[in-house]
Image (cartoon, rainbow, N blue to C red; front, side, top):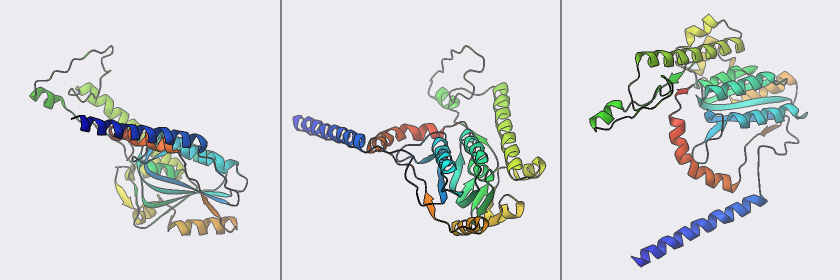
Length: 294
């Protein structure tokens, strides 16, 4: 028994020592989203995994709107950068994050081109639609112009196990969509109104970005996933092609020889270790966002 306790304490001491060491090392080597991009004239900004307003942490990758906006600002302010290529491979995510990135893209006064790789759906397509020109592979999965809001209802389960839900609220609807009680008809109606209004914003943005009518987009906005070839026929992308095709398009449009530089977020060792522990909770939180564009 004592041997087991001794081994446990030794293990904890080693873990703690590693954590302290990583903290000291990271204090000497701190990184952020700014870096030397001298010599490049085409900024490549990756938008991958789920899109959130903040980073997802280690082992729970996500694209942060804060990071993308920072990259866009850097590219905008760098006189060497002549065009921006959004390299998209994402199933979607937060509508707020998509709107933040989309609005920033429209503020940029340099050509912005999006290329959709394996996937650029829902919130990721919203972002792509904000660019000046969209490429997609013929087999890319894209569109998915819709909104989902869902949660697990444990009300019957807790009744089965004779567990009671004690409700104390100062407003009738304060615990709307609580997983521990069944929604009332009023709550269901109000939540559906939120979903529908979010959908309307999505349709409006895509229609404006693609110079199409809301009626044209509405016909396609039933949440369906499209192949890149189908999206091209529907007018949701401008051209079928690869990342290399997008770079050639930039070269021919601007009469330049493209020298690309990829913007990547760098993090410290401490952030990696902290992210590894926090991502355990982050996965639960992110998977239970009530309203998502994906």
